[in-house]
Image 1: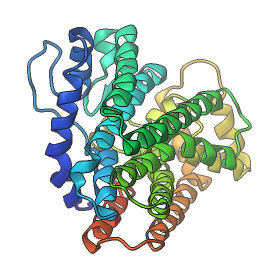
Image 2: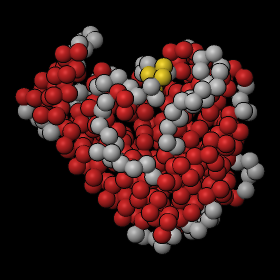
Image 3: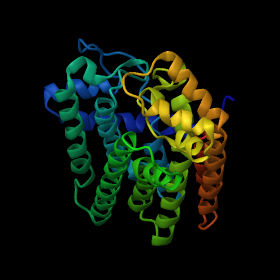
Image 4: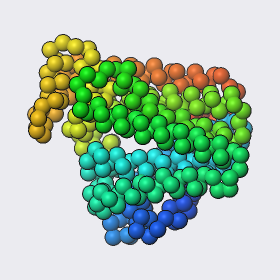
Length: 338
């Protein structure tokens, strides 16, 4: 199903990109080259290109959440830039850890510049995020920086849990949900909180919008887990069944295994087998996950999480336009084209 791209993405895109370019310009030339390639601004030779740079979901949430507390979107720019820099830090590192060779329909940075350069570029973005957020160190900016540090630590915890799950055959659904909450939902919650904090929202508004972002992040990652198995490469920008190739214990896989039965046993045996999985193994694993209810269960839980996210918006009064934009973003990122 095709879903219309929310107006908020286009409305805030240029503001965010200008802020990102200003921030990245402060990096050393070698690291800046890797980052500019990763962001889709340059090709391998350093020539400017027009490449997809993503929808800037997290920054858009920051901008709209500032509007939701009655401020102008522009006040959230430091937070929007910072949260996107942290997101890209995580992508650069994830691609190395997951051995992903393609992102946004282009070779990943580590495959071209080397693992060390990609890791250093990610480290530089993490430091840059805090630097841009606390300059100048106002009360709101320091509060936002503390929220970003907490969310970053949570995200790193989630990534550690994700890696540990690959070596385990006893992962249960509750652990999987906790992992994706740490790895993905915490940063979406932070994006919303940053907008509300920099917009000088009340504690009630900050907490409600953060709750919205966290529940939305859970729904978003569940849908993304489905895409990781059944998503088309032209949509995901990655190889088909990429998560199964890496033997990841994502939500559909864990749901299928937890459902038990012969299909679950066969699936677990495939994922725990030695050696590289063949194309036939991968196709069979995807079928076993679907036949044992993993796909349907994940999408049902995503719908439940999305409904919970929208209920957080009922806790506070928000301008009509901001509420509409938040609902549109939520609907868009949880209704992806498979």
